[in-house]
Image 1 (tube, rainbow, N blue to C red):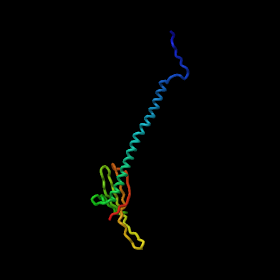
Image 2 (image 1 turned 135 degrees about the vertical axis):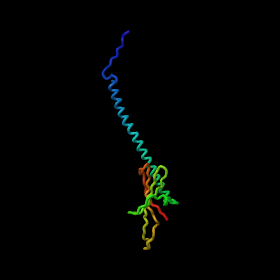
Image 3 (image 1 turned 30 degrees about the horizontal axis):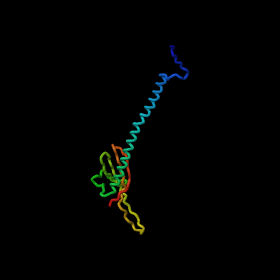
Image 4 (image 1 turned 60 degrees about the vertical axis):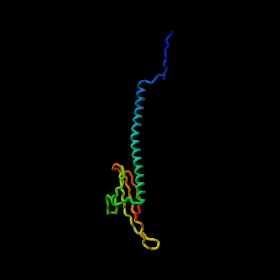
Length: 147
């Protein structure tokens, strides 16, 4: 019996070791690039989640303040200011979040249609700030009527 001899024509050769290594290096660079994105995405997701939670806390606190009985009472006051506008700051912190409420006095007089001066209800401008880990995450504004 005769020996079989394989003939290789042009372009029929396999991949050389250098080509395989070059392809692996390129794939490794692309893989490392993708892997560096995931921790950043996780960090952004955590910040977004904290922002959403604190926004909801601020809105819920504003709704609680508007309902009876008022949560703004002297034992929770931490600061008062007379200039340029009178305001008081109250600490209504709850759990992991620090909730600060600034109440600005907006009492004013208005004229009624009969030419008489009528007194409006006493309104306070409310500025609610929600902090987590010492960092301001969310805030909201509203008005509160106190009788």
